[in-house]
Length: 440
Image (cartoon, rainbow, N blue to C red; front, side, top):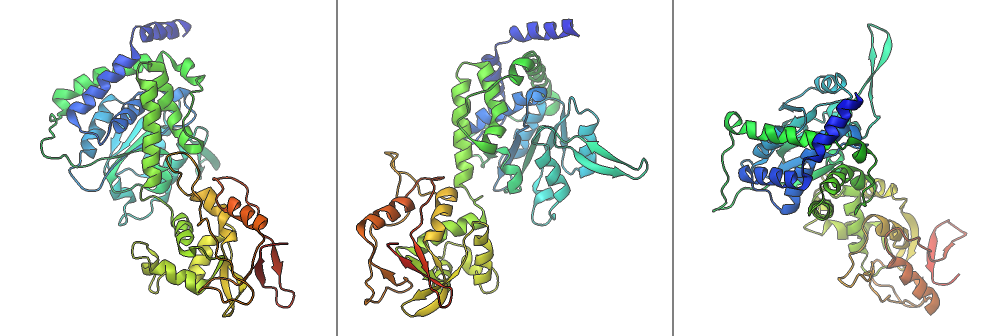
């Protein structure tokens, strides 16, 4: 066994990793036009990473999605199949079949390739929670599925850890895309041409590249297992991209820089895309709706949200977004309505102060080119004296002293993750509601 490992290492040393990845890149580009260089880099590195599964703690997913047919997603999956380690292609897999395919060889699992994934996860296909759960669990090593075997009267552990790629029309489930490098294909424009791909004729060339990738990567397994690449991302995104960036660092040349750029670009594309969750979208839209008000009645906040023609709130249910639905969506951010004293009388409503921490954590305001934080709210506050009427929807407020006002605005413009120091809030002894005060 030791001699065999030495032979693998010697064979790997004879292969120039950067040149090999360059060749894989040129081969893919011959048959498919990718939407960007970063997308091509991600696909090449993902293919190479399938040959190093024993070294990885996380198995990144590759999602190939398109808005319509004839965008090249299936052809790209064909080239991925031709060069990936132990490819297992399917267009309609049952969870039990996938479990068994991985469980039969947990030390050397196949690379799952699922075409037409929209027929499995699309709106007409049901939730397919079992398959989605398998793909989610299989992203991280050591997350087996548990099944009770009635015949042996025992609990069976089934391995789920394996690389997986999915291709389909539209977005995949958010929990899968959150664990994936997402490639957004598009239809070829006039003048863009590619060579036709035929498995019988072109397959052997891709198979030869697959063998060379396996020799190169498998000969460096111990090095890859110990790798701690410098990551441009954090949290789950870093877990997903770490194997691909480790492969790029092993290859050298231009690949380390290209890999990190691709990680940032594709992750940013996802963050800026249409995958924003409904609760986070509501948070961001509430910031716009508040304008410069310190508090708003629930009815006014709802009216402003529903009047945004580009937002989903007017069409959410038969009557649009309701107070109860909004309250349920905001509750997970620890934001709750309160009884507030407005100039027109007491009413249920929301304080801006209760939103600030969530705004800074989940939807921070963008930064200008200089890198200086953009205030999350306007820089000026309309001060209302006790004898003056507030503007519509604004809570009656005692004029704050300048020091308290400065502290408040500094907190509201804080960067993401910065602790927020609230203005003092004085409860009303008679009925338990509260009002805003600028000074303690």
